[in-house]
Image: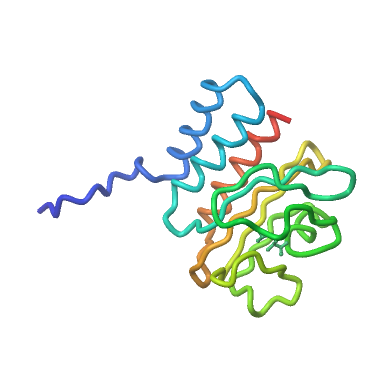
Length: 159
Ligand code: SME
C-alpha cells in the first residue's frame, strides 16, 4: 500500500543531513560561506527549526555569525547570560523544552516555545555554538541533539 509520501529513512535522517553538510563544506572554500551553508542546511532539514544560527566566541562573548529566522536582539551575549551563555559556561548541550518556565532564557521572538543550544568545542575549549529555536513546545529530542552535536563537530573543524 502506498500513499505517495516519501518515508524513506535516509531522506531526513540525522546521517543524511550530516552527509549533506559534509558535501557542502567541500563545495565552499571560504569559512564564512561554509558557516552559512551549515545554518542553511540545518534550518531546511527540520520544519520545526524556526530560528537557526551559529554564534562564535569572541573576547568572552558569543557573537552571532549568521542565522536563518527573524532578527534577534541578542547578537552578542556574554558567556554568563542566557541559555547560550549557560551552554558555553558548562560546555554542554542545553535543551529548554518550555522557554516560559526557564528564567535564564533570553527571548529572541515571542513565538519561540523551546530551544536547544549545542557548544562547538575543540577539546575542552568552546569555540562557539549552534542555537536552534522552535515555535513548538518541547520540539527537541535525542535525534536533534545528535544531529546538532554532529554538525558542531564538523563546524569545529572549520574554525
Ligand atoms: N535564547 C537565547 C538567546 C538567543 S536567541 O534565542 C536567538 C538565550 O537564552 O541565550
